[in-house]
Length: 107
Length: 264
Image 1 (cartoon, rainbow over the protein chains, first blue to last red):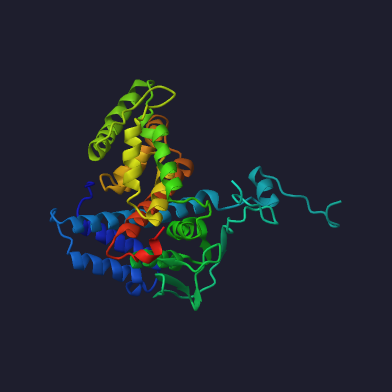
Image 2: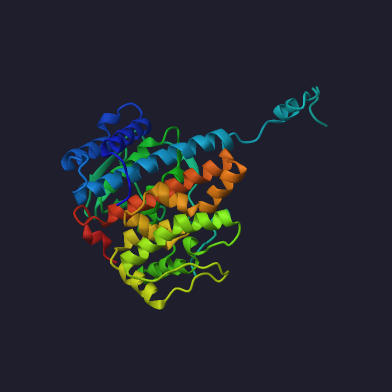
């Protein structure tokens, strides 16, 4: 079984990610309730014996990885790849120029 | 093959949905239908790209898919909705492969498995590969009672037929949905061995991705990290691998799964 650390830590981090994803009413969201119910039912503690507990913990850690990675990927996309092209004015401004004003528009 | 990659009237592949569109629904909910669990966007039932009713065999999977839809803000970013995409693939089967073909595609990866292809130069990387990859190969060999080995030759390792047979019959024990997930994870990680380790819960998603990208990580440590490229790719690979793994496990749990839907 993979080295996962404390189940409680995974649970807290997972709930935090769900809170981030949901916005306002996260406590009522099906995912939040399902995760809490699953952990309560299996009462995931530091016991390493129960296989069902280990499988649940692994699943929670995997879901946490999914939510976290999607959020981080989106943040990177927004920061580096989301801006699109600069306008001609912005491009000119990069090297200190301004576009000429032509009263009749371009020829 | 006939029917694959049909080009639509505007030149786009017919199975490729638009990358983004505005969020058009307020509430996302789940309901239970005849064939399994369905997703409701307001009063509308979610459909697949091929207009089939979106039904999943596991309630936990339905909840996770609903969460994907509910997480979308002003625009729906389909490329972040990995579980939805996997379900659509399982329902529509756009590549039209049957179970045997999927298994064959998965096991074929063993011939070019990342962790079996070793470098000789530079020595530091060769040693890193030995230290990080040897234990995983050994674990899989022991777990499945097979011989795999590794190779520095350009032709790759010589995989015995018995090894392939073992994996073929092991994968045959998974249902069609789970197999779609397994094949997806293998193509992401470029390794059958890492995928089996992951699905058997021997390593975490983060570890599997790290091992898959071992050479990249080595180069990053040597030459530096480029956030907009390296981290971008890393996060995307983690997201897809995590989604695939979760998908496989949620589709394999006999207690929560509706078997009728999963019959091949």
